[in-house]
Length: 367
Image (tube, rainbow, N blue to C red):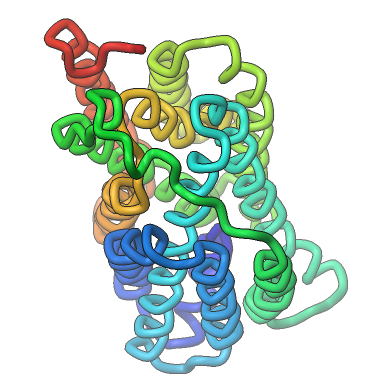
């Protein structure tokens, strides 16, 4: 998922597109992610979850291999739509099946799952400077072909494992009921969070170049620094999730994000400041997603469909916010990236307040 940001300018050249037009890739990918998240939940509730996940991985591999060889923007958008759909369905399976396996003990495992998301997003941008080091001209092809091959063994491995069963399916108690108002609030929080995360990870490469903070190698390194910090934060989140309440972790994460973006805005022309802000943003964002899912799992029944609804919220943010930045990036200037993310995260704090304060009326009482 992190391969798009560092290859965005190359894909624009490949299809003879402007930055504004190529940024529609974010829109269609997130729209596909939304479709996959929305409709795949029923398959996981009714079919072998691992078989569904394996099929999605194969589809992702095929689309990734096509990305660097498509010369037309509309064809590239179609491939990205299919890729996003498969990614959304895979995400629903990973998160839902993990809850089914570990039940109330899921928090550390959920953080561990998302830690491995971070491992991939950290490695992907590093392929660009590595490709240049070994004189590989088409770095976009190196990234996409490499990832297309590397993800296939996971599909084969999944098919050898028995699929978990949702033991909560027959739970009709108050704790087992779906609380749709809470689902909506958490989905909105994930919408704002994913919008901020995808925007930072995808646009920091172009931001560094347009702000003259460094060359393409430096932009690639800073992109990896962000995803690497996110990965480290999720690893740290494994023991943290075992000791602290989800709402406490969420509040600390959101405050850390706001402080980091403010630093980036105040010292926007300082590479050391942007580097510090990037590290702190990654660390602060790290556990928001898995903690929000844990927050939901402690308060209601988690089915494949509910997981899909929550992930739909996140995909909507990943669809809207990066595209919004792309439409303003050239006309207003690169600083609009940090300002948009700041507004986005401020709104996330408001949503968090509604989630927690609703507990006094029985909405989010912690069991």
